[in-house]
Length: 289
Image (cartoon, rainbow, N blue to C red):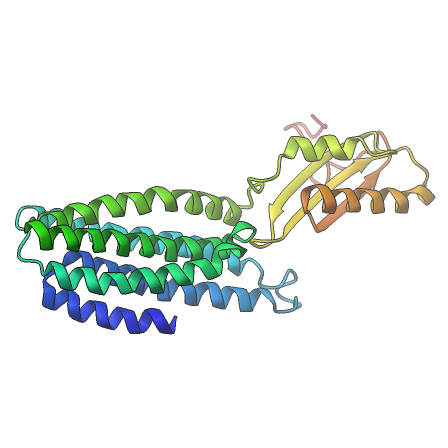
């Protein structure tokens, strides 16, 4: 964050002096990086807080909101750059190619180096993945600006400045879309994309003592933790229930990385009143459907 703040100041000043939209757009992305990194850092800290009487799961979901905010922020900033680039297509203006190239080269080091710090963690944590994509997008923007500055310096084709900005912006949008979709799914309690509900159901049904199941729900507690609730139908006697619960929990943890599972065991044919918590779905006349 400190490196990016220093680079933003330098890039903004030289972008104005060089009349370069590429540098200014790169500075805009770097500003969104600082905000995105700050949000990811805050969410990571909140997620480590212990559960309370009000937030019984803790504040782990803040990591999901951070990832979603990172995606939305990146798309908004990119949209603003697209608007400015389109208006400059008609009147490109003068651009100092050498200054653009030298200043943007520093951005490759700052943004690329920061992205590498998040690359490993981004494989398993959507919050860190959002931070990684944010930094990698700016490294890509800086690289494109370096190439643009070199070509402008050699040829004087200043119209390349807004054209390259548009190309990079659409590339960033394409790469950010998956982050937006995944974080939105998590925020809406969707089944995590790496988990198949059918496979989870089949695995639970294959356990000794499980005759059937229903009310199976899987959702994300955070960008790294997954929860599950399910009603298991079993004819096993009560003393065997503990072994069944241990086997189900261990299997879910090892095979699907579901670490927070809640089970309700029912006897075959167990009836619940219509409308009761955990009960059957009922028809309008009150009988079970």
